[in-house]
Image 1 (tube, rainbow, N blue to C red):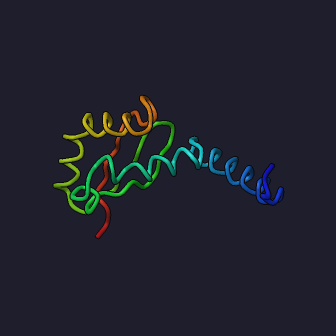
Image 2: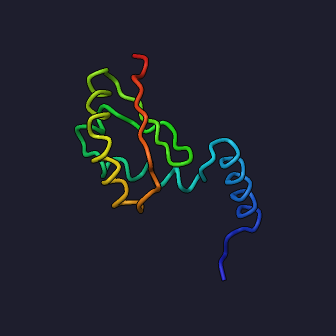
Image 3: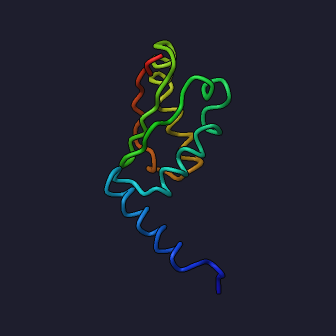
Length: 102
């Protein structure tokens, strides 16, 4: 038995439904992907690339310079393998990279 307030559980269910309707993936899945990102890419890439959204297996990452966009595109297969090892195969199926507005 839990001491959790039932209204909080209902609110969590509503947030989950809204997140699914907006993004296609659950809020929990998105949070898990965002949390795994630093471990998957390491500190050097993390300093220049941040995940922006996650939708039905597609991870959108924003980088701060065009050179990092090229690097992440080159490393996509390796990053997908690392994310697969952390999250399970097929959770993240592609990585789309865009250069942010500085």
